[in-house]
Length: 425
Picture 1 (cartoon, rainbow, N blue to C red):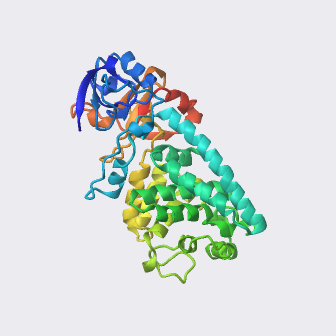
Picture 2 (spheres, rainbow, N blue to C red):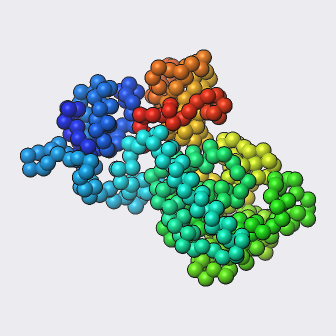
């Protein structure tokens, strides 16, 4: 790292900020390092009274010299240094993060959420078209499948928290396309976290979109919580993996790996599940991933019982299934770390009565995320949101705990407005 201390007045777009002359808790920035992407970032530094900043010239622009004209937002992005080559000794998820361009860092919280809402709407429309065409004609619009899976892979890279928030906070729909997009997205996120290559991720994305294709032509009466189905109805429902593969078997351009994922996505590692003629010992990592994320979204939507579960209980259920040998325990642990017990953008209430929005999770303690407090102990709005980080509390201070997760709309809070002008990784 080549660091340099400079006056804030010398800050330029394209510099990589890695330090300031005061505590970050007294500024509108929730991280210590990010790329300065606009003049508004510089204005926020100056408005916070910061006199000096520290920049990393290996990851961003250096101070302009006579031989190098000042950087502007219109400059070619190719001037940004390449990200460091990942250390092969690091875990895959850490190495992957090292490969991200600095341009995805220092993101606007509200901007991320708004952008992903629009992206998700576009993708939902595409998935709906794909499944509608498949149901009505038996034909698969492969070009559209490729477009959506490529969008899933591209939009999830560097936008994990917003993608997960969109899945968790969406208005649940009984339509298959909503669940299909959620499973496809989560499968790519978990697959990438454990180091799968792009080809395997592409197969996961496609299988996620099409894994329930066999449900498209079953009687509508079966589209209800599983615990309400009779034995004969449940037997018919259990045939949907095989029916899906049969429906898609005419699509010569669909990879064999996708067929396998669809066929096996309801097999448990103890041999239970369906269809029954598949050896669970031969089930590969991608299928185990698809099984986990499908189960997670079904728990969130209440597919089994009609009662949607909160994230924390859904993750506890997955953990218990891992302990029982139904799911891959190591993959479940990775998934829990990826989602976070209190996911980014969750509205939480502390034991003090204060309320805030989760802005980042700690790998060291999933129960203690970074929070942006927006209401005081009697639930009155704070004049300015206050960043709160459990890790900076001294051992002598009383330690509040998160006591509940709230639905923002039920307590009259608009997340976009509350997060405006705040930054995070």
